[in-house]
Amino acid sequence: METENPVINKMLDELRVERPDLWPLVQQWLETPPCLHLIHFLTSSPHQSLTLADLASDLGHSEEEVQMALSCLMMQGIVIRLELPEVGVTFYRLTDQEPEREIVSYFQSWCRRWREQLEAANQLLGRGWHWDEKQKWVNDHNDCDGG
Image 1 (cartoon, rainbow, N blue to C red):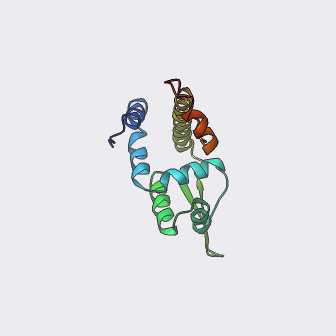
Image 2: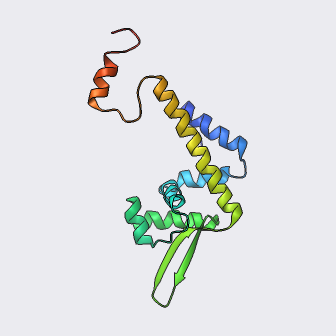
């Protein structure tokens, strides 16, 4: 996967080099729209089991999109399905399998590291991520040219 943005390319190249075993999985996550949202959401509560409808509602995606992401993640062993046929309910959650949990943990750390680097660069340039109109005025009047 290549983009026109050199920063994104550097991020992805780092991942390809550091974890070539992880790269094919991440490529699928990037190509399946809500996969990344689903991974981040499920890792925030790794032992919580939710239905498809709950996940779609919480993520703000359609059930069809979430089902596609779940299918991808189940094929990779990242997510497991827990069926309760007696009541006709199916739940989904992150797997307890250590190799897959390590993959998700590494990916989360990689995301966190890049977010921190981007935030530090943004702070160095004089603007934080949360930029309101008052901040815009202050920054516009304190630019590098002394204006």
